[in-house]
Structure formats: C-alpha cells, structure tokens
Image (cartoon, rainbow, N blue to C red; front, side, top):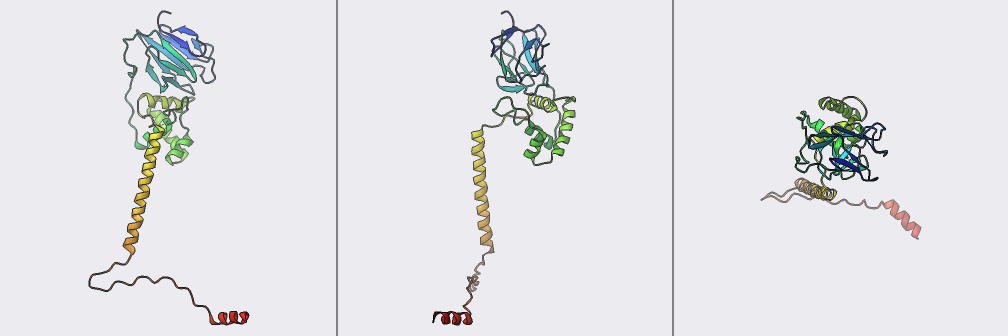
Length: 258
C-alpha cells in the first residue's frame, strides 16, 4: 500500500490515511470505524502535514489515546508506532523515517502558572493515568480529596480554576481533557516502580521508628534525677508497697481455719 496507512490489530484491516485529516472512532461517520465499546464515537484524529503525521486526542474519549502504551494528547508518529484508542490497538506504517523524533510535539504551548495546591491537584488527577496499568481514567474529585486530605468541595473549586487556566471548555469529560493537557505539557511525571516505592516507604518507616525510640529514650533520661558532685545522690522513688493485712481480717481467717 502506497503512503501512510493504519492497520487494526484485532481484525487485520488496513486503511490508508487521508491527505489531511483521518477521523477515528466508533461512530458511523468516521473514516476508520472501530467497533469497540471502549472507543468513543469520535475518539481521535490523525493529521498529516507533508511527510509528517501526528495523532490528536479530541478530549472527548473516556479511555484516552496512547502511543506505545503512553497516554498522549498530541504526538508525532513514527513508522511502526502502536496507537491504542481505548482498548483497540492499531499500528501505523508507511511514514518517512527522516521525520522528527517521536519525543518532539508539533505544538507545545507555555504551561500556565500553578499554585502549589493546584499542582498537587493535577498530580493526583493524573496519577492513575501515569501508572503501569492501561486505560485508567483520571482520578475523581472524591479520590483527589481523599489523596490530599481535603474536602471534595475544595477540590472542585481548584478544578474549576484549572479548567480556566488550561482553557478547557465546558462539556463532557472535562477531567479527561484536563489530564490530557497536563500530560502533554509535561507538568506531571510517571510514578516510580512499585518495588522501588515500597523499598523507599519501608526505609522511611524504619527511620521514623528509630527516631521515635531515640526521642522516648532522651525524654526518660531528662526526667530521671541526676546526681550532683559533692552532694549525696538524690533519693530514688520507692517502689510501690502493698498494704499490710487488716488485723480483723487475719483473726477472722484464723478462726475459720480452726
């Protein structure tokens, strides 16, 4: 097949990419139809610009678009790239090898300035999407509130301001579109491997336990009476003594034994 084309992995269907824009989705009016429930009716587009081609997620999909397993908003494609629309896997062929690196995006606008709390919110929002699991939706407002130990109402207020800063229009799946934009701008980083994270957490817990034990030991030494040179040692607190038996009780027991 001449020119760039896309192959659907499940069915083996091969379709050439249009000269300008190729629409992909589950709807009947798209150029490449993927009958998969995880694919939105209008999921994404593949745009050609001369010898180059890039995929653009429209922000209307629930499960997002991934290139070689990584969630993207826009991404320049290379020959052989695996593009996943939801759980439908496709592969791109026929793209010139002299194109720019896959790590280079066609448009990379300046990221808006975020407060410390807004950065915490977007990090928590994108944390599920940056894990090793595939096709994970961004965190909900309730999940973000639990993660940051704040109220859900406060998280929603932060999300409204973030929608304005990133110019996310009103409509369905605003959180997904915001997460796509944040990931595309590189504002959040992938999570460290679970094994390394567990080792770090275990070391931190052991260090915290040792610190607490040392603090308790120092506190006990500080409250203990100290001896002064040239003076008799301070008296140590006497151990508790049991009360002597009452005479009446003892005579009564003796009478019973007789």
